[in-house]
Image 1 (tube, helix red, strand yellow):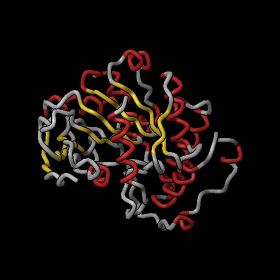
Image 2 (cartoon, rainbow, N blue to C red):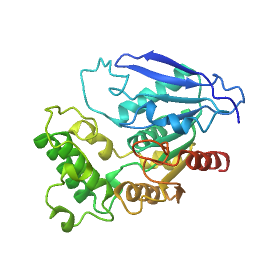
Image 3 (spheres, rainbow, N blue to C red):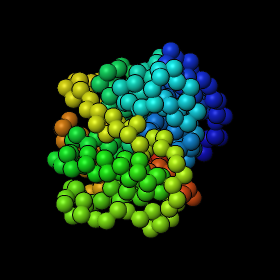
Image 4 (cartoon, rainbow, N blue to C red):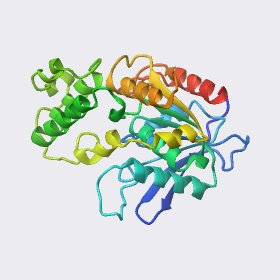
Length: 295
């Protein structure tokens, strides 16, 4: 196995934000292959450490999205997370690095950004693997899903982190459409999930607050994606079943006339097996290598 490359951390100062990013390997890539970017939302660069380690022979770039992690120096006067802004940030980052077109693995909210990026700046990208984008607009029960999401934000606003996260976990793991049976349940109990029951008073969590509502509601230009030059792969975890992010991935794939590609594990299956939400990063990395190599 190739020796793990040194990680170099840099900051790109844009008019509205300072983007902190990490580069593993050389630019341009020593082997001539496109660099591999890994992006998430609200996950930052540190969430991809295990997966990046599976690509010691490639140049891998990760970053913290606008307003998150180490990229909290914002000059736009806003606190929201918007995929259109993040796509523009990534376009600027690739131009700054002189790295395009790049291969892209995008997780969750990052996958929503990836679809927007592919529609607006297709020349930046070679292959886009969008893993379980929470694109609620693609669901047949989109209104009910938005209602469930609103209940998460309401639980957080009224009772704090533990209540909000408990509501989120229940929503994220619900199998199938959001029926009246879902909404008839009593409020989710934080203690059931080992979460704090006391309210610490904070209301700025990027996942649970309304700051990220645009992530689930942003609909990319589907006609542009159908015409786009990047190869698009909609991916779903084999263990996700009929939970919301698997259904949204299938819904987007159907809109684009694509089949879904199955990956090992669950929504965060690229994480380390030793982490708090254990994944299968070794198997996941092998599958991603296969998908990137064989159109």
